[in-house]
Image (tube, rainbow, N blue to C red; front, side, top):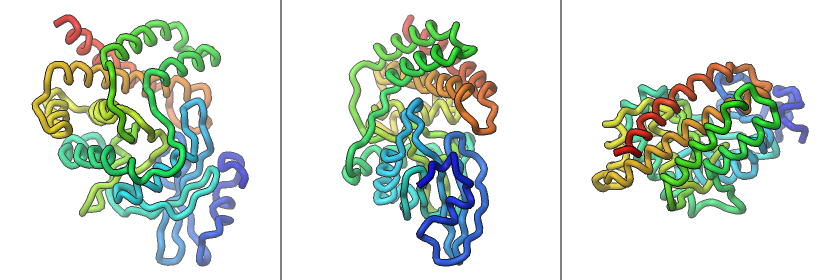
Length: 297
């Protein structure tokens, strides 16, 4: 099958061997590494995700497909109906996509869903599965940005020194199967239950990365973080855990900023990556200042 980026999307979708009759195709908004479509096939509605491998970001579609199947089987994500290179077809969940304020307001359910993902998906996985080591990713992004002659290249040495400091602060980790991209828009509330979508970056990781991402992507304050950590670990938050968590929160923000720096030069999707880089660097610098204060006390 021709790569999704090189073919006409509607022709590619229409040619899929899963339809019962004439279909109607509607682009879905959002998506900054994929193109997503809502397809009506008679009374049935499904979502079609188009996107090939993106090795520079560690996105390999065999991994996304395996994660999506296991997440569907675990009941935390829509079921996979069809998968082929560059194409993934999923049940459509009719519901409301969250914004950061919704995640904060529904923190208890969001944390419970993340914990369920970490507990329930791993036994259902099949085949090879990637790991997601944020510190390796940051170092690799550094090499890529130098190769691309990024406008941010002069800042890279400071970012990579910060990453080394954060890696030492996090220390040894436990491994779970994690989502690794807990943006608010990946949560959907259907009025009865909460779902999590988009498994592009899923893989073996420390639970602290998902918790750091949940906080950093959704504007949690210190009280939100404390409540989240206590709920997840079912124990009072120690100073040691608090310190390791804040290190990973910083790493999550730095990774998002450096991801966007790479996208500035490499993505063909119409999105203001420069503004996204600027915003995530601002948030990283604020979190780094707080972490630095913790190191001194």
